[in-house]
Image 1: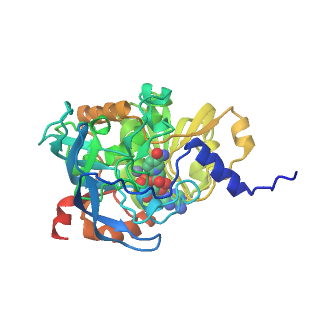
Image 2: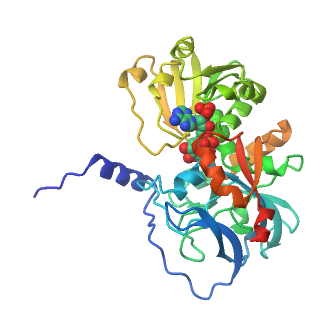
Image 3: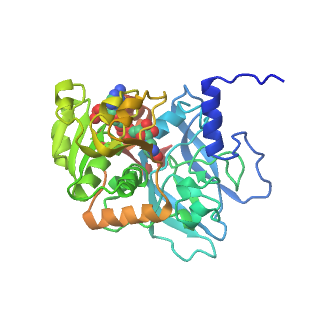
Length: 387
Ligand code: NAP
Ligand code: ZN
């Protein structure tokens, strides 16, 4: 019997799907008899439509649920990738899509079994709203690796059917286990991006042992990158920022960098060959990671958190010489996200944000594509009231 050959793309898609488990993105039937209410939101109707005002269903809180009135929601580049279906090979977008996973708000209602939150409390939700809670990853507090997790948007919604809707909305209902506490000293607009940009950069730095005396590179000074600079600096590392935008140099130094390299300048890059312990790559577009692999010292690691649409080319020799390693890292689990928020409370760390009304979200997306944001857009959800 002959087995049909599969293209590289088909193999890559099936590999990703195998990792992500047996999830199906086909729309399940809406469950009957569920108690729901309407929430205002912004959604995209297709990969080419702008985001526009809409109304979405939210479940009434069940016994373990917390209902949150959303005050701010950050705009992550992942929202843009997802809205425009740029990750169609791994996580195809189901429309209408309501993005947003950097959520800060106030608790408005709680279910009868909720012990950790009460109405009026500050609360936050990141990229995860559920997991199976029983697998080894969940038991280790690493829900980001659970084969049955539920992402905050564009994932099958176990309660209402269809897919989950994110934080570009005036409210959200989430099981208390996936709701985080927000230190009271933090500015709320700047704290929202900690829920994705914060944990996604904090987690790999903790994993790879970023501490005092280590030489750490941060590639791409965007939402993730600027949080990476703040964390690496707070952890005591010697921080070098690699940017394609010469105009960001002063900001990089102000944010905590010890040195800034314009990555398009080969001479500047050459000075750092074989010197880094760790590099965090937070670039959202095609770029040459080989140039950064060459900057690692023996046993150095480069971790990708940026998730560009197209595959990146890697030279085997760059890794072989120097026994260097290349890895990736997704968001973070619930305990580590709380640890990161508490760390931010202690060190008074928040994102540098440009606060916008929801009506400017499409303009913000265009600026994100041009790397023109300092350094995260945070949507003031009060602006949704006028829709
Ligand atoms: P962002 O704010 O748009 O920042 C991306 C930065 O990449 C830009 O500011 C720019 O920095 C640099 N860049 C853009 N185009 C470039 C190009 N052509 N060549 C070189 N550098 C370029 O995006 P973000 O929200 O930080 O997200 C970054 C990436 O991380 C996205 O792909 C996002 O989906 C991904 N992400 C992953 C996770 C995860 O769990 N792993 C979580 C969240 C986000 P300079 O101007 O300094 O060059
Ligand atoms: Zn994100």
